[in-house]
Amino acid sequence: MLDLILCVDDDPITLMLCKKVIGKTLFSNEIITAQNGEKALNYFDAIKNSDIDKSDNKLPQLIFLDLNMPVMGGWEFLERFSSSEYSDFSEIKVVILSSTIDPEDLEKAKKYPMVIDFLSKPITLSMLDYLTVKMQPKVV
Image (cartoon, rainbow, N blue to C red):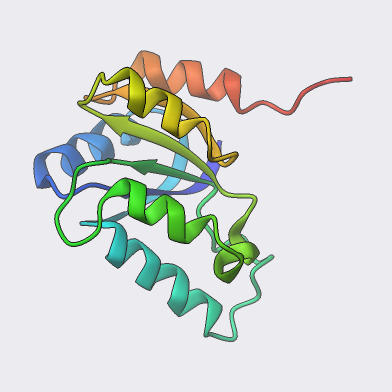
């Protein structure tokens, strides 16, 4: 089970659905939301500029990220979030959760090492089961 997930999407219905579906499982203890990439970066800026110990598990372990949002979309968020300015958060994994099925978007997502998957909306219980398995530490 994850301690904290951040869902970044401009659609309030999608955010509510994420909370409801995740809330029905043991996938995460807490879910926070941001309506666009800029608000998500503001959240991480506040953590960076605070006295909170970043190893204190107050960081999301996973971000569900929409691509098409006003103000700052998912691609711009990823570009900024993968820069050295946010290197303190490099362990956070991202799952793109989008309604797009453009093969170019799928290829573009591979450019970002933090992106572990690209899934189609809406979020489902079977997706969470799949991600639970995918996020298990590899046994050597």
